[in-house]
Image (cartoon, rainbow, N blue to C red):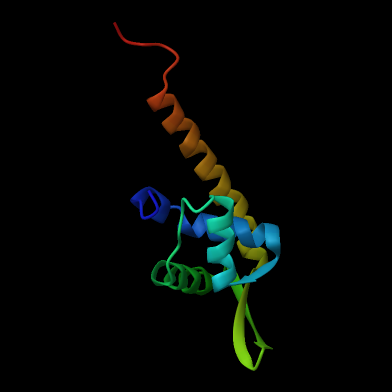
Length: 112
């Protein structure tokens, strides 16, 4: 299930949620946190992560900070004020979607 299209459709929301909780993170750190939280079930590739980060940045939802770490430049991503508001909206939307799917997959009544 690691490469499921269902996960790919939620990648931006996953990123926003992590940044909301952690404050700021760099790309590899995001991939490792997702892997840790899902016990290895979800593995985000760089090919999926960085386009999503760049899109969120272009939408004004993320700010980028560059820091020198071990003689290398590292980009840290953090939510903008607009990003914080959008995170709340997207999480509410995702939760509603999950509730709807649970209702469809496990209805409390069965048709005869």
